[in-house]
Image (cartoon, rainbow, N blue to C red; front, side, top):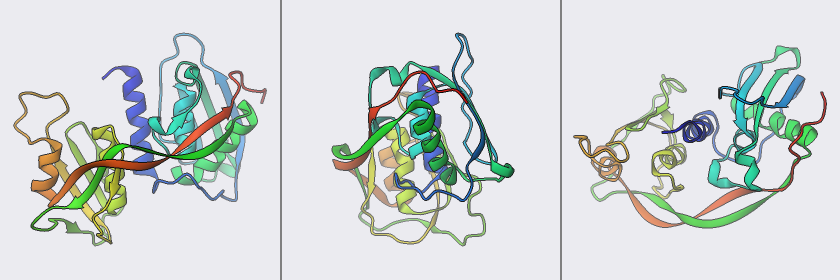
Length: 247
């Protein structure tokens, strides 16, 4: 996985693990007290960290990724000029009073920052794209219901494993998008939250003893994936400037 691909994958993981997936966000009562957004100098090492807490520090990341973090979407849900992927930025911001925010609460602040500093304007569209439906397999689901005792801990998405604690089927479907590289829509009809532990062969692996992700989902979880067209909401960039305005 090259550097750019890894940054995109990390941004996608931040979206899945840090929010409940949705373009509409409610602004918190605080904003950024200090914001520095600059074009990255040549040779800047990329540093992508979860935008949460009281500080945001990103270095050498594209405007596409900043939009992903601001709207809670993935790479293929951002439409705009090609340079969005090539122009890199450094972002340092601190919340008012050092108030700690979740990634979801941070989204409207990032949107406001992009609007003010890069004159970003956008609109939303819904597109039907190739993807998968997540359904209950024949024989029924094999899922461990969550007790809530470990909610929010031990979540990760790796090349050969997904672990989610206290996750809804909507969240699991969103997580599957990362290894599958296509959107997944929940059609299980299952409510509540579950502990998900899924192990599968990494993409492109020929010597792994693990099953494919499709077979693993059916054998380990009692679910299945069915290819279908999936409606996806996208952020369409109408206007954005390369050079940030002064602080």
